Image (tube, rainbow, N blue to C red; front, side, top):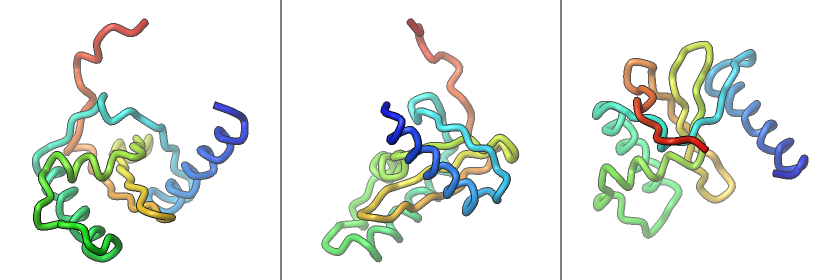
Length: 117
């Protein structure tokens, strides 16, 4: 990652932190493959994905959206909020980011992350 890409990513994290978690929030980017979310969180993601698709993606078929597709919709960027211990999942659609918070009681880190080399 170049300095410019790092700087842009850092700036984006700062914007998301300020809007989603408060000005002094500390967010850490995670890989979605390392986390598991509750069925309640999946339902919330699906409702949010349908709403975004209906409003900002003409011609899409939100009525055909599966749970897996709804989850995939919101994993462009995943952040752990150090203060609340919640997650923030973000979808990038066109020039916008749509983020949704997942409270700490509705997610956890997967126990077996495999071998790290």
